[in-house]
Image 1 (cartoon, rainbow over the protein chains, first blue to last red):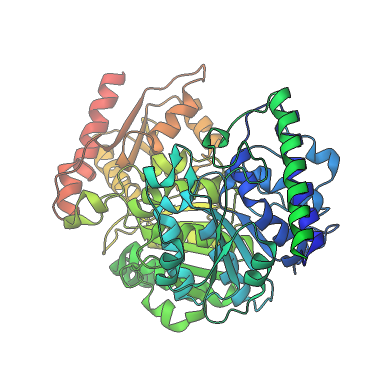
Image 2: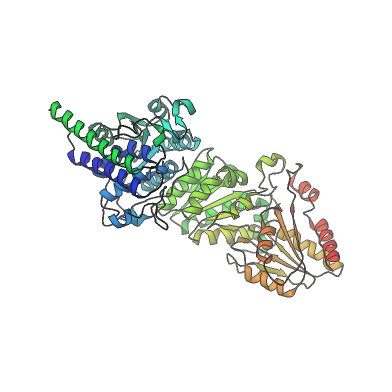
Length: 282
Length: 324
């Protein structure tokens, strides 16, 4: 583990995801949150430039959650990055809260855009990146997409324009967990060769294990010139909680008291196994 | 750009489509944060000179209206005032949900300009007509919806839009050789309809291309002793409710005229406002039918649809007889 603080960030996020998912008392998009957690930990623990006490700081990097249903992998990142306070975070899915099941633009909470309808965030990210070019500002723009989201044609409209405009200040991350609402992507609208697709659209592509912190850091840190960057992150839906992994019933589901306890135990077991593995590896 | 008889005749020859490009070219130096986007219809939208003169302020998104609106939103979020342009159905319906999410939900400073709305596209047919665009755009919370009456008003609207901080749908109607409503400069204010003619027997409330035809219809009605008030309701949303209240107080029957289906446009907006009022006046909504239009050239279609002076006057006179 070369980046213990990122690993710790990810562990904190997963614990928070389980806790808020249970305490909010409703079904949540927990599976897809857990698949994106390591990517988000690398982003908020290493990559993104921001000022936690000044979320509107103009020099901040912009992050847009194009897979808007992934808020459970987003708000906990903002919490552990110190941008959202614990009291605000605890209002998740309570009546009248700013924090609901899809992002609602709120720059004071570090939320750059409203999402929820798929295939929109990447277009906005292209606009934000283009604006930075025109204004000669040095911040980068990041958009996280689901692989199911790439069913939307507008994603590929945006992909075409981004490379045409040579937006090398834009990074799209594809949370490639190979599942979507109705089941396995392969059974619904198969999108194999995600990396080749983005490469064919003129992007610089990094294909990585989306749970390998070192590999993610290397992909984010890799130089990129003249092209937008796509990080195709192979992930596991429900990652970190053994009984949720690759079980699409956890796409949008509710934790009971017993499944909550099981989830905490599964997280602890996974952490223990990872620590043991790392220890033996050393 | 001065509004005078000589200039408006020149502008009218271009029509609202070509003239829009001229206006945006003219005002660009005053607005450093202004950007114009097109979905591969720049030359068809009168934007060729703009693109050549201000290449850094023009973005061609390719034939991808949905993405164009999303990109415009990203640019607007970072401080640009973005005019996105396309033909009416493509900007208002192909990209409707992008307009809803970005201009509506996020209230970003994007002006969606619909070129050649109504039936101005002539032989290009219903695929290119803006029959229902106002209905769709008007239903989206937070949008201002404006339709200028002639080229002089295109100038007024685009100037106002460039200063306005918020999302807007600008509906350009009429073909080349746009009939002239305004020959002299006049006060224009978003959200404030303008009374162009006073008469006690009927109130005609029109927008876009139909303002001119309503004025001509009012002249024909006057020959029959029917005196009409004619209002240019250039802003369909927010509607000038104070002006409608005044018309209601006068008590004369009310007619709305629009180059748009009678479902969901100006007539609907006026009816929605007046329906709960205790005081009643009969209302007739004139517009395009709830149908696709048999295609021909623009003037042929206007005549076929009864949207020129003589058939308008006849319909209105008949309505007044029935209302008595």
